[in-house]
Image (cartoon, rainbow, N blue to C red):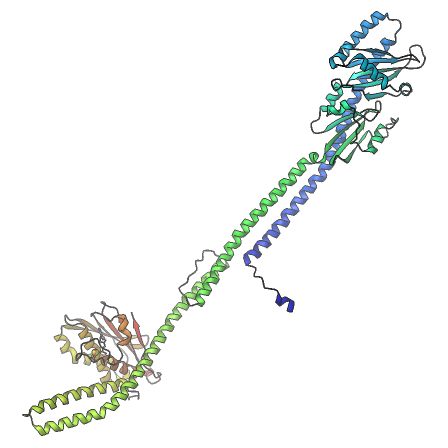
Length: 623
Ligand SMILES: Nc1ncnc2c1ncn2[C@@H]1O[C@H](COP(=O)(O)OP(=O)(O)OP(=O)(O)O)[C@@H](O)[C@H]1O
Ligand SMILES: [Mg+2]
């Protein structure tokens, strides 16, 4: 547990996990395909290349053999002529000259008969062309003598006898029966290598070579090796032993074989075949890389394609995972915003998958949260308002109680003094003013008490429509004077429990306010009743200037007025509020500046009255 907790927890994003999985998949699939294909191709190609190498070697051997057999025939023709004693020497020379012309490859022919010195004839013109002197040629012939005894026993001898690069030649020696029945005669000829070299140069892909009886290069793609009579160092020893060993009599041994070996650090595939003539060997070789070039190219291509696929997979994976995780990231960012209280957030959801429906649910959640928050704020405002009103009520009630008795004293003594001084006295006028102002104060005190009154009153059954009719009748005259036109829209409503006088006062307060708002030009006031959601609704609307939103929450407070001193005390709506509250009703404003004002009052119908919970009416300002 300790070791685990010591390790820092690495946060691997979903995107990266996605990518790793995808790349693992693609890599294994592509890798498996590449390996299988490369392997398949390689195995197939190996047999094919060995077969081809062996075939070309055998073919070269066969061609070499037919060339050498041709040379042997020519030597025989020369030898026959040279050994014929019946021919006149001049005639012989003429015939030999003609033979050299007919066989342009043949440079010289020597005849070894009995114990005598060999007789040699040669084409001076051919030596001259190559820049070789007669002396040098004869000296070389002497130094590298032909193994006459071995050839007499029936063997054929072939060797590279090049003296100058300009004149690559081979020496071939064959034995012939003696014309007089004695020891066989050996005929050795120096023959130009041109035909064999052409044969060696024929293949472009393969390095072709022919090896003579001494194990030296007889013909090769590289003429330098021929000129140097270089040993064929690249051929594995075992192969050389087998090939250059004594010629096998039977045909049971294989004609040739292929072998893989390293020559000068290069891996080679070689094919070797016996020419079956004078222990000569034909061979071809090709670097392994060249032989497997196509296979290698294919492998390289496959690796390239694999890399391309991998890159494509990475790009596609990145884009794809980005696409998926981006919406998740956006969602989580939006969630954080919502947690901070921003409910205005809406996610764009175009995809129709799970993430799309998640975003849809998220949007639904934020809109619902928004609605709830709005409702919560309204409830909170109403709570604050009613608490405030309750505080005002207590304050007002306290003041009213304190002032009520002294005021009664002031009024009583003023009236007493008035009676004593008589109407003629100037003091009388002063006393009437005191009495009038004291009465005004009493009315205010009563209003305050009415607003603040907490104890429940006994209510009777009231017909709201009748209350409205009577209230309008009282103020009708005053309204008409001020050019205010009253419209009534009374629908039948159920009875409610309440105090008709108080409700009448509510209506009158609202009508007077409306009339005052319509000053000086007048206008229309509409009074409407109806049933709404099981409640009785009373609406008083005017076409006045409306109430600015910033003062809407204040208009129910006692002494809040916008009217000049003396015209309004700011008690009308607070009294109204107190009465509506006592009736378990609600009062709210629907007003916008310039659009007029509507006061909406709702009261519970008769049966609900007794059971409604206590508390002030809800005041909602609706802009
Ligand atoms: N219909 C209305 N149109 C525009 N403003 C109104 C309307 N009714 C009330 N008000 C505003 O509300 C304020 C408070 O009204 P309230 O009736 O409580 O006091 P008042 O009318 O000013 O004085 P009082 O009613 O005591 O004579 C008013 O001063 C006025 O600014
Ligand atoms: Mg008023």
